[in-house]
Length: 164
Image 1: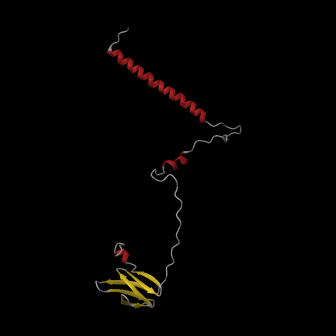
Image 2: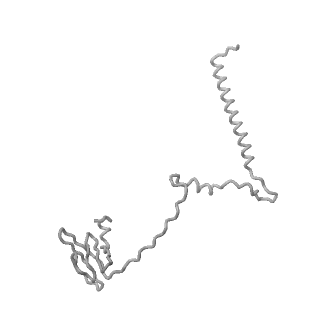
Image 3: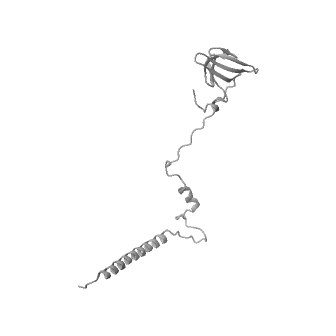
């Protein structure tokens, strides 16, 4: 048996490791060459035309759609939401321009069709409508069986869009 020194063992280990790495790299290169040759499409006799059986590799622009997609989104596309038609606004001949809410009394300042401003309390009659409810920035009026909600136009912006 051959006696080897520690220094020789280290060189031998390095040589074997290098040989294994080079062998693995060579085998990988050989397999990739076979794979690449297999993936190359055949060209028809007509110049510039690719055979119909093989599809050319996608371009970077086509792949950009895939890698720019958010991975946290669902895999399938959601069906489009049905668009709702806005309700036609009923033009009343009455506009709420202010409210005053106290513990026992509630008042609304209404502008009539002729431009006059009138102050009415809860249960009062204004322009043919009966006042059903008055809250901060809002009033509900009734005419027969129909009920309408009026709003002070600037109140929501000042109050921070909060409901009372």
